[in-house]
Image (cartoon, rainbow, N blue to C red; front, side, top):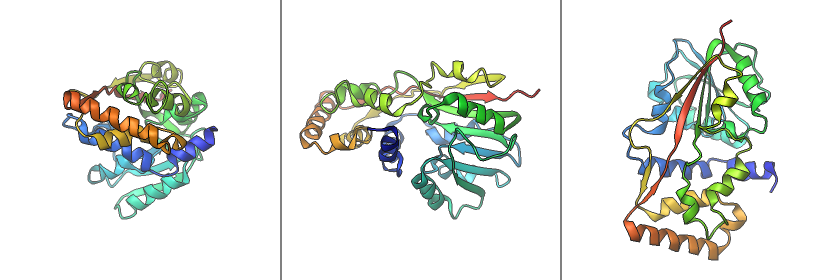
Length: 272
């Protein structure tokens, strides 16, 4: 499958992302959900101009709408026309200054120093040329402006590989990362990518137990299938084998514990 075909299959609309977000939302024991936690890190001034790259269906803003200062000017971008359409539909009645644009993060259609902050929520590993994207982010940030970039660690969700051996050899999480993650931007590797462009770098990690404790088969299967190629999803034998393996895992222990390794890098653009 070509990169463009994969991107269209995965991100033409929000259905696959929604299945993955739902598992995290339902089976996390953290008292603060992911998108409110990310928003808590955005300590920005009144009148801040904010750019989000790869906004998807705008979940960050939908879940924090009551908390977004009216003085902020927020520009939401995505490479997918379908995603921008969904973001617009979700925020069309919001009493805030949201602007929407289909845009390639490697060639941002904005002027130098336009923004106080750029947000990249679990998207920098999707870009084919990360150095070009980071150069563009640095260009559109004001001196002292900040990038807020979230990503995963190498152990993230790897238990799902064992559950999905019948679907894809080696497991769907590993296979998906190889096909979907065009750049190796992880918690472990991100500092090496970011330091050449930014003067300060801080890693924020959620407090408490980050893992998922899944007690229901259906949302777990939905997550696994969301990162499975469409042609494999049509194989009834493989899907049935997956269902049996998940059912057995839940019967054995009552829950499936899944490692979550996530964090947010806050990087500041040089002032001088």
